[in-house]
Each structure stands twice: as C-alpha cells, then as structure tokens.
Image 1 (tube, helix red, strand yellow):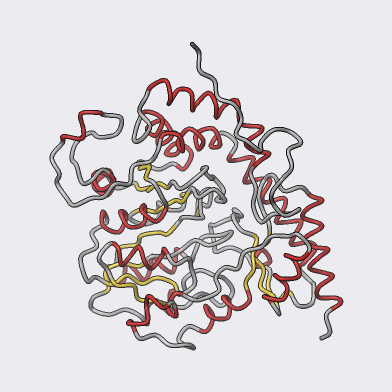
Image 2: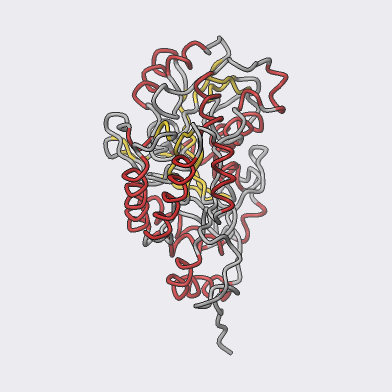
Length: 403
C-alpha cells in the first residue's frame, strides 16, 4: 500500500493562527508552498528506513557544499555542536584561550568551554556588531590559540582585520557563521575565510529546519575528517549512510551529533529557494530602512552603515538600536507584534562566566548594544502590509512619547 503524508496540522489554507497578528517569525506559508517537495523527500526517507545520518543527509551536504562553494559540508544536529566540533577539529587543546566578542549569543562562548578551551572576551566595533580587532589584540595572552569572529545580523565581521591579527600572532581563525548563510567576502562564503565555520539551521535562520540542525563548512580536508569522526562518537572510516559503520574503531572521544534525515529532507527542499528567500529578506529590510532611518528615538539602523570592503549585506535579522527599548518592546507586543532582544546581557557578564573576573564597563560598546538592540519581524512570509504595520507602531511610540 502506497504511503502518503498529509500536511502538518495548522498548515491547511485558512486555518486560524495561534501566533500574534505579526509574529517575530513564521514559516507557515513557506511550508504550504513547499509541502509537495518536502512530502516527497520525507517519503523517500520513510521508504528507505534510515532516519538519521543517512542518504538524505548526504544529499543535503552535497547541495550545501555546491551552494556555498565549500570543499566540505558536514551535517550535524545543531549549530552549537558544529561550533564545538569545529574548535576541536581545528586543534583546540585543553586550556587554550579563544578570543570571542562580548556581544553574541551565549553558544559562541559556551562552545569554547565544551571544546575544552577558555573564552576571552573583546569589545565590538564602534559602528557595527562584529568583534573589534583592536580590542581583540589587547586581549592576547601567551595562551591565546584561536580567535572566533561572529557574523551577526546582516554582515560579516571585519575579516581583513581579524585575519591580519591572526597572521601576526599565529592564531587559528574559526568562524561563528551560524547566522551567515549567503554572506560572502570577495566571493568567498562565510565560514571559508579561516579554518572553518559553523552554520545553524534553527527554524528562524535564513535556511531553517523544523527543529535543530547545523553544519560545519571547511576547505580543510583534515578539519573535515576530524569533524566527521567527532559527530559519530569519534568513529573512523565511513559512517554516513553506512549501517555497519557503528562497528568502526573509535579513534577520538566524540559525541552523538548526527543530523536527522527528516531535517535534511526539509532543508534540501528549502535550499532550492534560498536565493529567492534572501532577496525577499533584503526587500523587507530596505522597507524598514526607508521608514525608520530618520525617526527620532531610533539611534542606529545597521543597514545604514556600509559593510566591510568586499562584503555585501545578507539580512538574517533586521536589528535597530533604540531609546527606551524595553518600553518599545512592550508597546509592540500590545499591538500584536513580536520582537526579539539581541542580546539582553553581554557574554562577559553572564553568570556562568563570573569566575573569569569581568566587570560592568569592561566592554562598553557591547554593553550599550545589549541595552538598545531590538530585532523586528523579518522572514519571507512577512507581507509588505505587516512590515508597514510594524513601522507604524514604532512611529506611534516615538511620536507620542514625551521627550
């Protein structure tokens, strides 16, 4: 009997949405449009009967490598795991220090800990959110082995400055490119400007799964081979789509971070429309820029500052920096508009890093960004009318608020 899959509950046309009128993120319409292809891919997985680390993962890895230009794409079960394995595969040793920006998602720093290293923080740029190479240089010690720039929101970090610093001091560059699919410098994709990079496919990412998934990109054969071993408990030899591979010798202490084939089935379908999705995000971001650029109370729209030479904008998050950020967020929530604060606490002041001895005021630009940054809804399913409604609500907040 032929098996068929029906659209997931809530994806039928006209179904009532459980989300705010303008949610921070939704991909319901995308899934309605892609469901025939997703269903076909999922049916292939079901018929084959291997649901993790199988043929669909291999097919997605090949497609991702072609799209990014990477020599190797290694699928894993989260962007965080991709970071941890990248650090280990690139040669991080226990106790080595890795310089990271103080302004980023917590996984940037905790990945260093899980890989056996020590995070050392640096401030961000004056007119951007990437790591400041001058602040990074001030953080160097004899134990510094790596530097991890983070590509945030809509552009690459200052990779020319980071690369020059790394060359002067013999550091390995590993990239937290979790948000950076599609971002390139002089034609080279994010994650391929150093030893390797990590991608996240968390659902809200530019290329998003329906759960957790990630990948490691690298042009280094040795880094790729080590990462492939690490994701499957450190086993050597072929393990991807190889049932007998479970008996292969274990050559290093790895982990269980195999990508699920159903996630690969979704990602493979969405990879085919990634260019169109990136273009739609750019349209929406430009719409926000035009409406909000000169609004009193909105102190910075990052889209108004040029990317570093050789790098263009690929917008994952449209982030603005504003006065009275928390009050604005509450105002938008009351209007049925979702937002996210990126990030309310800088990494050096997170409780889990209290033992490192940092204090308020150590990285003033990162701390200022944490107090002012808010991300607006931005995804291909967002309509022009919804984006305009977000702008209307922001304008209302700042024009009616006593100054």
